[in-house]
Length: 570
Image 1 (cartoon, helix red, strand yellow):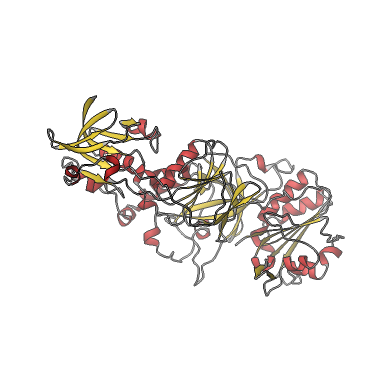
Image 2 (cartoon, rainbow, N blue to C red):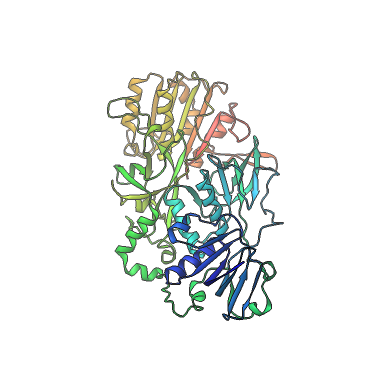
């Protein structure tokens, strides 16, 4: 048994303990020892980066006063450490904790621990504290596809290194962060956990595993053998939230510079914006083509990771609140959110022809294409993203989320002779562009019709490409439907079905046995029903779903495949 002298001993190699160690070492403290009861600290990469001194497998047995040095003595099974003071960052486990949401009993649903094998697995982490970030980082390092559902998380309230890890995970596209979303229910679908979210912006997602990361409290005095004398000395501090300045008072020789406030950062506006862009953005806009001033086709290439996806899926884009807007609207609570990002999910579109006149294979591209309309401000809603995106051009930086997701795909189409109808409103045709191109590229032989309702002819960003498809493929028809043009009779998507026009004009039969209908866009056009007391109730405005249901079509549900597939676009 040997004695070792330190300025500071930290019990716990979690994000809080590491944040204290790194901050005080950077402030000039020379001798800092971290005692970790387990075999790994929260962020192992920091050991080499910051030359951390870590004792693995060393739980504290006693913490007492050191009569000789007037400091504290921390005893483990291997050593006794003498230190000027001790910080206890170790957290108690989550024994006995149970989720408040409805879940199913499954060995794929874990609490405060990781699956035995995570490489190439899709894992949902649920939590909003340091622990959730720690588990997310470990899963990402193991090669898992991770989504962190962190409803209620405030990054500034995390430990500094947890906040930094969170930004790094996003920037390098190693994890998808859902800051406001938490599942309402975890169910079992075909042996795998399905997370059902209550908000319309977050789709229901299926995973290989779900990991709950509950909040944990600091260990009690008895768990580290803290004596009464040491407890009353002021030299042992229990860390609930990391307050570096308070801890540094134990070391008067150190000078701690607090981080600048938002107001201070804004005063050095230009330099800070470049720092924020470098910190958060992970992709470059390579193509930005306005159809008109309020409608654009853009392509984005990420710095890290691939862009593999299925036609019909979506990805998230983000820009900082610090970016300029094209309008004069004022974002609510901008002062507090100025250095944050606003994110939105968009269906992935597709160019249809390459430079040689062949159908594109965009699924093998290193870019993603999006079809986006400028959302104007209203008294009830000030959009955050598109008024900032309107100011961007090729070469500008942007955030691209790591997880391409969505169940709105061509998976239900298994017969190449089936009739396929794609109905959309506005930019809701984006996923249909990718779907149609993929079908024709793979030789689908049955009739394909893509109909889109817009206000003006100018709102049809892909019309010329569709016309080329029609010219080459006799089984494909594009039906643009402007509703505010003097040269075109007004009709809506619903009219195609109620009047029989879709059948008579294109020589089709709406047979549920051989027809799939894909709907994307305005919820009023789709018209999804609700189940009220066991009764199906449709919206007051008749939508496509009701019209098709009256003809024997069925909605595609998670457990039962139907022939009406939908994606609500806003």
